Length: 341
Image (cartoon, rainbow, N blue to C red; front, side, top):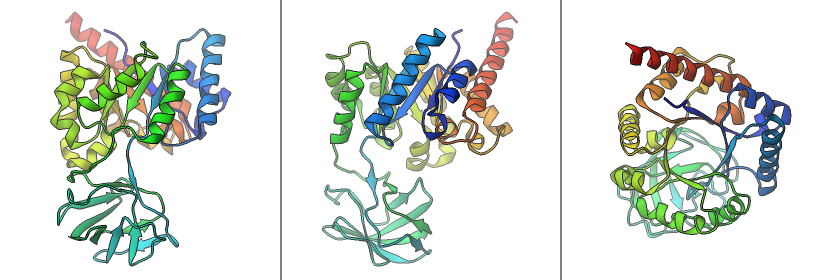
């Protein structure tokens, strides 16, 4: 049985050559460059360090470019807003500086696909709004779950039918960089159906045939077309963060298991991602539940496991990689014993 591979996201916590070198020795297989953050110069510098360490340490750590994809964001605010439960205001497509009465958001498509009583999630679900009315260019909303609203936070409207291109202009500029510098993998965010993957492949493959295209499954639309997406993509990422917003969070484990099973039957690589060892962002050891989560993903047949904030902004990036590696090896020993029996 092949060893499950470790993907680690690079960021401020893992930028230095010293930390990266330790992560290499800890069992790192693939680095993820998250193009939702950082400049081209910063990402190229990270890629340069990876290539240098590969040469010096005789390793072959690969590079994955993760495209930001289309994401609706809160606009400018006069100040951070403390949204209280049951408060009402407008979400508007007008370019305004937001206050308690109206807040802008950058979705420019038709609002016809958003219905009354639709729930809107802001900042990964920390704030929840309910649509109470729809005008031509704005939504009347009521706060269901309050919190502190700041500029540029992500907005998710999972049940709405929104009109947007699968690749933004920013994605296309980022892609040029990934193709030019021959990144090993490109991950497409917010894939809706197999057509999105075909479009990306048509751009990438003629110029960089060896590049593997991974589809991030994180929406209801993707779940509805999952079999064709698996057939079209070179690999799948079960992106549990946004997935856990678009479907009830208690359904995510079963969905994860089913996608992993489908990928294994079709002999496609499959990554399980998001909050794998999340407590290690702040603590030197994971919780027992996190260890079990990683172990069960391996037992289900995941070929790759991804660390996100743990290595990008966490206090213990090297320890997180080492812990992931230890869990993988222990599960391999367990599976080998089962095979012998």
